[in-house]
Length: 216
Length: 349
Image 1 (cartoon, rainbow over the protein chains, first blue to last red):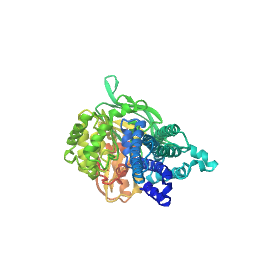
Image 2 (tube, rainbow over the protein chains, first blue to last red):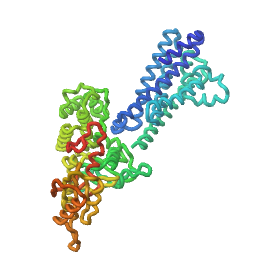
Image 3 (cartoon, rainbow over the protein chains, first blue to last red):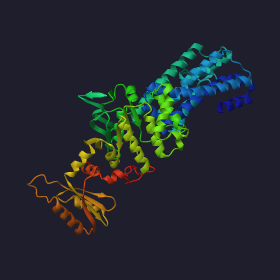
Image 4 (tube, helix red, strand yellow):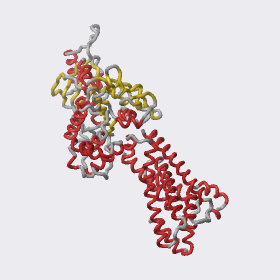
């Protein structure tokens, strides 16, 4: 509901500007939906002992993390798809490159679900996971072009914007609606989303190994 | 299975050690468990039982040493090792929101049971464990005993060669614990090697072919329950049933020159272990003379004796003699668990 309410609020404030801001909000939905779901699932499973049950099964650590990431990504993808379709239907703003939109949402979901899984393995409780997630998410929102373009950011913030994986998700979604006019070439958006996804996945597998060593 | 000579070993443990920082949880533990045996690791809380199981099932990485379970090294091929063992953790941790049948089918999937066999195996296990009528019940709605049963059934879904049970009857009432013990015996009769940990001495005595006693991470004895009892029988144990037993006087009995140990049993019973006279040169008044000395001390301390008897040592007595850990401490160890019944031999503690 949170992204839907934000989109509505933005529309009421500036009906003409909604097309500019909506791609950023869809990307933000990706970030929040995936990281939150991954953080809740993993920390909750740790608490009830279900994670230990999975660790006792003949399943490799990457496969186990893959399962967690896929389940969280499925939820995040569903949420962002619903928000995207709702936006398209209500505001009659068709994406010019729907295939690119689908691919961006898919890669973004895996990336942010991996990030959420990595964070949740570093903490014990759900509220800790949410707190740490927010420390990461809120700064990213303000430097990744969600509300304002990266182009207008102060120069000292630009390196952070270029490091932020959310920047490439926002840019990918924006280009899929507008067809052009992105900050980065579209292939770079997709490659970096995939690479960041791999990086956080590897970090999550490492986090699981570290968690096992610490707890057992 | 690891084959050594004619014997096939289900578990071979060699110098297994686990450190948590400065704390030594398991200290160079070595033992072998032959195929088809029920082996119990007995010890108080914090002795290193669960840590040992965790290392043997690949959940925890040892600091030193090695082990093989069903022929697979714990440091090498963990996935293959996990395929051959079933694990019942101390706390039943199946999915609360799934039905009994769904839980077992999920476990079957997790352990790579072919799709066509999953439902059949799950229903067969539910029938064997007396849970078939409840197959559509949600797991969270089960009683503790039934939850334990299903957790064991889940550990058997892939027909493991070795079954690990961590405190299997913890928190169960007397009847549920008895039923569960009978189930474990049946599994063993069907050829499954059983490795269990317990702090419940009567349970180890009733179930196990051999008992390993572990205290502070060290394995201090490993014998059959009968052999451990025989060790204890070398000494004479007298039990004084007193009107009251103040704690400080126990030390006075321990201090007698011919007494190897004195400890409280129940509320007001005192057990005194008289040393065996092994050397003719020694002048300790063992046997009846020793009993006389003990009675004299009791009277001098103003303790009223209701009755006095010499007793046949149990595994509990052997445990106390070997470890110095009082049986009462063992009974109280996990009493905080819901449903626990301290002092009952039914295994609820």
